[in-house]
Length: 317
Image 1: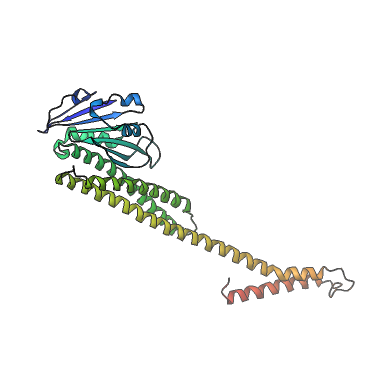
Image 2: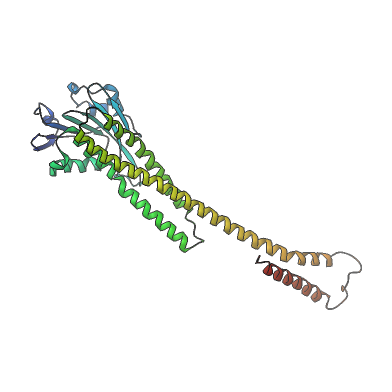
């Protein structure tokens, strides 16, 4: 599927299917072509006169899991990782490949991307906000891609707060598995943000970027820094909460071991006495007494009570 948007210098916007609007546009206009393609045949609709580098076109056909910035003689090639909202996973990304040069911007992706759809709607409904240059459309796409990660980060932060409250309310509750899962997702998000942060810095260093455009991209850089820093902070919070959970588990284990040791100690004199009285000798004290059995029982109970009292005085029990 190919969708073309013609952005005129006077702010007028025209959108349509196919590449008709991209052919012979006015000299002061900007053309944005959005293409969903998964095969070389799908990419073949791009005109050869645009002279996109073969290596960049090859990257459009291979899975990309990392953001990328590459400068070619005729254009700049950028790969962004956008949130894939079409899956059930919390954090699944899809690559958005972008070809950009003055007056032309082409986005290529292998499935619908909600961030691209939002920018397309924004270009048609609020042209003043997006502007007219290719760098402004690129900024809108970059901004939309990053902004979609923020609600996800807020939701994970709320889940983390809920887990901490649950653990504080019930000291025996184990939230370790949930904490590990959240920490893993946060680390994946941070690994996604850092390369895109580098791409944005490369864009800001570009000599083709105007001072006005740089202002907008610096604003996106602030958003990326905020997301990355928040993710790093939440990773530390998760690590601290996991450490508390492990300490609580160790404390529970220590208490159990302490109780088992006390029970064993209390049973020890009973075992010794019953074993001594059960020895096969001809004469055992009180063996012939009708109350010998009860004397042994009371002796065992008495020693256990004395040990229990001693444990209590030592505050071991």
